[in-house]
Image 1: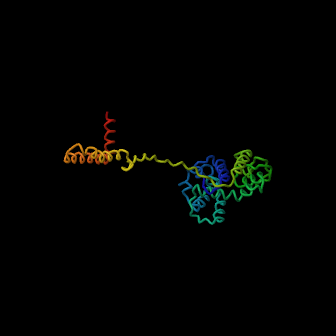
Image 2 (image 1 turned 60 degrees about the horizontal axis):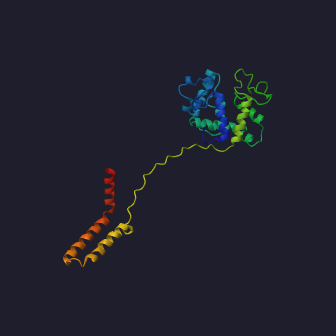
Image 3 (image 1 turned 135 degrees about the vertical axis):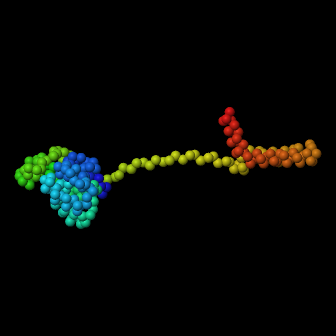
Length: 268
């Protein structure tokens, strides 16, 4: 269904298509009167409006009616719509265009007045029956050819048309359409999948925040002082330099040493 068609009208148009051509899928838009679409050289949805109007002149001769598309547009109806909507004739007769034209026919027949409560359901039902011959009138009235009872096609008596649905079904769908209102259809969108990101690697603790760094710094500085009086000054110098070297190495390689120990433990 074309997304510019209001929700209530879309409900009604789906029902019309189901009633007129017996289906609501994509193929419903290619149906012509008597389901003779397979006898055509190409689907009508692959034609422009101009091409279809030209072809419909032959449909009447071959198939007894020019009714075409999901809403069974008659040739004269399409010509009137083209003039009224100033269509060039080059637009493709695709499903979306058919939906928009079908919605325009609903408005012609009083859809907006019905939704606003300005005309009654039987009156709107009669107007729909005048547009779509498969729809019955909802109350006794004068038809195109004879006096009608509730449930008859507006065109009863022409030996061609008859109602294909009950008046109760019409009333039910009209109530449903009215309850849905004129808001635009909301497309259903799938929730996008969020890719899981790997956890960020643990950042090494800054050297100045490491207790181990302060420990080795303390050892590197205080130990030489404690040993100063016990050895010859040359021995003291060697000890001091050794301890300082070990302290610096320990501070700089804390992360690597830790990782290596972890690997060895896991290997065991």
